[in-house]
Length: 225
Image 1 (cartoon, rainbow, N blue to C red):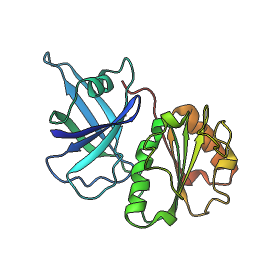
Image 2 (image 1 turned 60 degrees about the horizontal axis):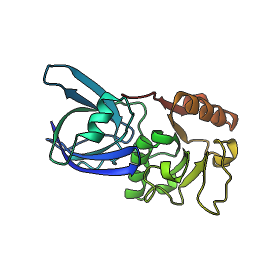
Image 3 (image 1 turned 45 degrees about the vertical axis):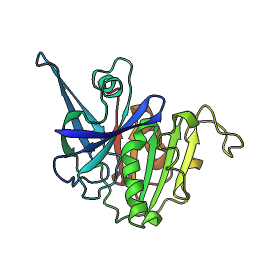
């Protein structure tokens, strides 16, 4: 069991839950944990959530969860859980969509798909290796941008698809090839995370830009209820 230490809003429908684990975490950037809820009648529901915090060997992790109106687990987390509560978690899980902080990487995320990529960005900044990493994030509007106070920086490009801040240099529109670094480092591994439609489109752009298929790692997600 993990203890909820902090709950904070990222957007109007996304919250980050900081959890204290019973023992130090040894997760890698890009891995996830499973949250399991059990009702009094024994009914259970489990959902997988990416870790947003960087690996630091501590006994705390952060999971950022989007609230879906009919979501069993996300609704419980958003509407019921408060600091001090205990929740059942299992992990870390995953070994393919991970970045160890020691090789060039291009990260491309759409909406809540930025969560595992944020763990990678935080790792790069904490270890002083931001030179290895570039992050391109697509969000509908400034109000929909996760980690808005922390994410911007010289390593990041933000693409807004429906509304922009005042005097934003890029007009609204979907991610396009011009939003990617040029050139893309030939030895970089690309990590793409988002909805199936976003992931397919981003993968196509990377391929058009010359990124070999074996250097593109994709994590697609659908509604997690």
